[in-house]
Amino acid sequence: MQIKDNGNNGLTITGNIKTVEDSLEIQKAITTHLNKGIKNVLLKMHDSFSMTSTVIGHLMKLVNVDKISVSLIVADDRLYELLEELCLVQLFNVRLVAN
Image (cartoon, rainbow, N blue to C red; front, side):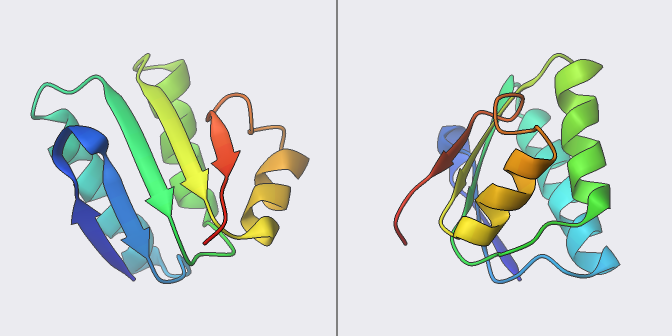
């Protein structure tokens, strides 16, 4: 997994999110992004078909506790369906796009 910081346009994550290390790397990248004074997070996930519970929990904290706007752009139907089953599509402003 790799993360690219796109400045005000958020973060692009390539590869599958599957390990604890991936989760920690994403959390660190989001924190660095927000420390720039940006009050929203846009995550573009081109390849991942899953997301760890740690990342989901961190995103939920950002939205519900820190009042940060979170948006996800996902390219894999399976990830979209997972977020839909967890009733997180609206909370995370999830959009499904063709890869």
